[in-house]
Amino acid sequence: MGLNGQVLIVTGSGSGIGKETALQLANQGAIIVSADYDEDAAKETADAIIGHGGQATVVKADVSKPEQVEQMVNAAVEAFGTLNGIFNNAGIGNVKPLLEHDVETYHSVIDVNQHGVFYGISFAAKKMVELGVKGTIVNTASIYAYMVAIGSINYHAAKAAVVAMTKSAALELAPHNIRVVGIAPGFIDTPILGDDKAMKEKLANQHMRRKLIQPEKVASVATFLFSNEADAINGSVIPVDDGFLSF
Ligand code: NAD
Image (cartoon, protein in one colour):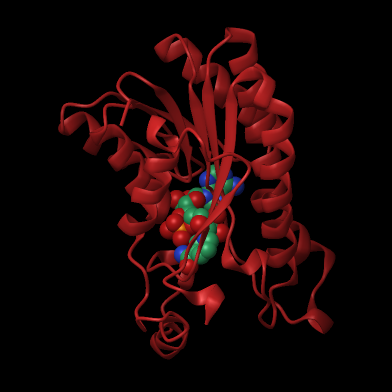
């Protein structure tokens, strides 16, 4: 897939989609900067990569803090001498119906899922332009960028912004040979969904094949988007939703 020796940052690498993508990118020869605010979880992912003969380093970074995102980007270049891309994937949910929603709940999600993606795009792009490298930025949006459920106004706003920022950044970074693309997962079987079995079954039934999607299936699409084979895809956000948006 042409990922050999590419230095790629993966945020939210300690769990779920980020973890599986870090592992698959490394399997394709990428060098991984495993970044998460849960440092132990990020280290587990890096250790698994190194255990399989790959190369990885760990950075503890809270993506809602711009200075930590800048530091993460600098740490990648210090460790491996260059930077070829970033997977802006770290995210959280914090569900509260609109009439009970408050500023704190709103910002808890916007600060990570929206501003965190902006910081990742911005600091990584500036560094790649400075280094003069061709690069790829992949952002994790959601089907919730396009449709709504009760209690998720913060999440919908953030994910719609991720779609908009993906297109906007793709346009502005095209002259620098940096592609910006996204994925819009359906409901993926990761800890973010919580433990409520009945709720998970309800979510599973939203897909055409009535099953939650496994994180590896999202990771393989994200990995493809980083590859040369995806070179003509730019500014697009690819649904990985087992038909959810058409159903
Ligand atoms: P997950 O909870 O398994 O993983 C999220 C990871 O992000 C965790 O390791 C967590 O520690 C890390 N993280 C959270 N906030 C962070 C912060 N401020 N700074 C750094 N790291 C932080 O969840 P997941 O399902 O793998 O979610 C990954 C992305 O996929 C998120 O952006 C989420 O919104 C999106 N998504 C998930 C689903 C789903 O159904 N699971 C659907 C659509 C989109």
